[in-house]
Amino acid sequence: MQLTVVLLVLPPLITLARTGVYRPLRIVAALLTAAAATGWLLDRVGLTTPLGTAADSLGSASPWIVGALWIAAAGMLVRRRLRRPALVGAVRWLRAVSSLWRDSRGDSPSPE
Image (cartoon, rainbow, N blue to C red):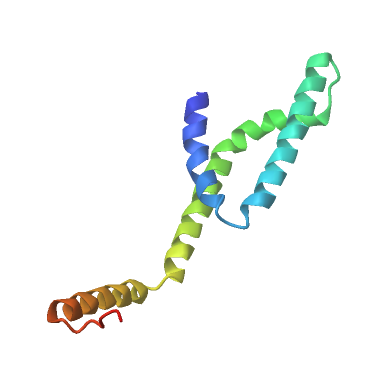
């Protein structure tokens, strides 16, 4: 079960780690995890707190959280793809072809 969770959550987190959104996301997730752990610990000691109850109720929201991570990661990938126009690749290709063509004709400048 734990391996499944890692396989579902790790790819979008790695993708999001390249963005500026990741640091606040990581901090909020760490704070929520610390609050849940504190609630569970106090529950084990015998002190019933709303933290433990709230942490237990988060289990039903897990699929939604994983889905939101995947959607955010996919959105980031699409946004990154749209930022780099296809023409950039075409211009590089044309420069490489023209350079090869000049070299084959002997038009390239000689080093002096």
